[in-house]
Length: 116
Length: 112
View (cartoon, rainbow over the protein chains, first blue to last red):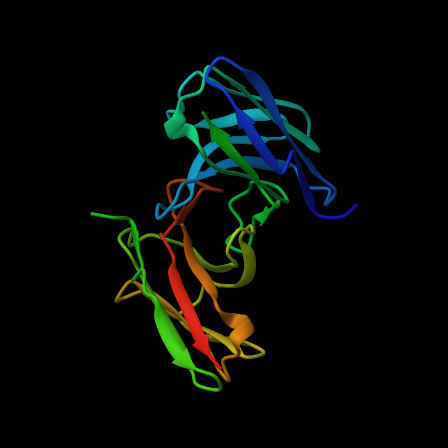
């Protein structure tokens, strides 16, 4: 596979469930990102990992827990979510997470999450 | 004040026309600017980026940047129905080396 992949593509969970979202990038990048996209709202950056180290936590509730075991894989562990957490969760990667003006982020297909 | 503003649309143009999408940003120190296309139910796909004042052309797409006025635009020539999508403007600021700030997007509808 090429590019950025995400699994599952769709997820329905109850508020008491625990689930995990997985992202894998095959681009040789060193920075990975989690975004949340809700209807009619801008993409919200949640977490950033650069060379496996978390460099940004954008005031995300603790019911979302990221994990980055290596530069190619990123997880988002979910527990006791709320209905308002229903959204499209997008993973992205970029080459270095550096200050280059041309550094571009590439997105995976997303996981559509519904919390009941 | 929103950091990156876009008209939500929809912007409706006939097939073959030029579609003009605009974006304004509040951080005067912003370094680079990205346009993504997002089809309904899909993830954002990079179209192009620009970081110098002026125009940058790539096929039917032209990005225009005016840092003094703090706006960036995307022109789509010879619009096709397949261009119908939401176009997201993203801005990379000076305060972070990697962080992109996204606008809410403009929905473009190209009528056959």
